Picture (cartoon, rainbow, N blue to C red):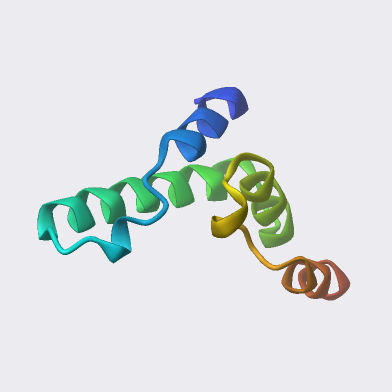
Length: 77
């Protein structure tokens, strides 16, 4: 999987699947989220790099807090 393909997976992901009352929607969203996280871990060693890539491709409401990313960078992760 390329970074461009992973970016597309993040963009089409249902970022609010956890709000669904339909268990099937929640399960599919959780499975897709885990798939994305697994691919991010393969492509990026540092957690901060994964978070930055995620933020560049996810909607604003689903992004990591910049302070959290800065703390990871300070810790070397």
